[in-house]
Length: 228
Image (cartoon, rainbow, N blue to C red; front, side, top):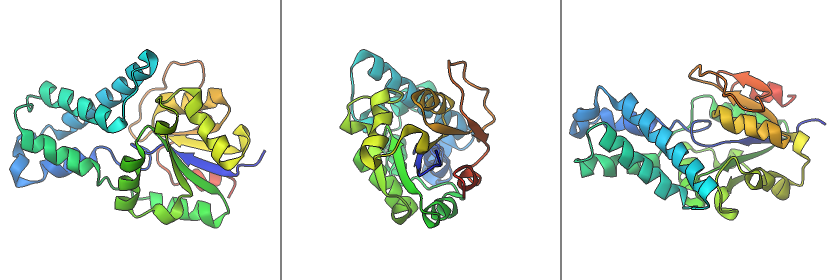
């Protein structure tokens, strides 16, 4: 069936999750991370995801903001920065102000002009997602932000992907699901979505039972994949 609905993961897909550490490192108060902020950002993101998976499989769900703080605390300790509460506070504040990748506004505008439904489907809490959407100024280009908080479990549980059909009333094969996480795109392929993995960092393919249908380096090709 033709694509009617384009759905995006949020963090790392539409919004640059490394931006918080990069911005803090550029500020005079936080020169301690000036050289190794990429390592801090990588540890933060990795633990954030790992904790979401562990909470999903153990049934210990918690708001993603708590998970995000837990991941940061681990990363700060790992990089020797746990004793700087001002840095922690600044990084968390910046996470609410993440900017979209440069191609995002034009890409979403093209989808809307082409008559597509557009949505976010994310582990993020509603408040976190609203903050990111507002900060990036893309609210008028999205129909809805769907959060796992409505089902109480993180991706890649199928009940999360169910939210798309429940909201839009569309079939699974009408959905183009886009994620920067290879495991997310792979699981969504197994669910029945048409998928696109945005592999900005040139990462290897995850060894899972399914693989993403499409692979891209950024989001500029999404309208074409949607048939526009």
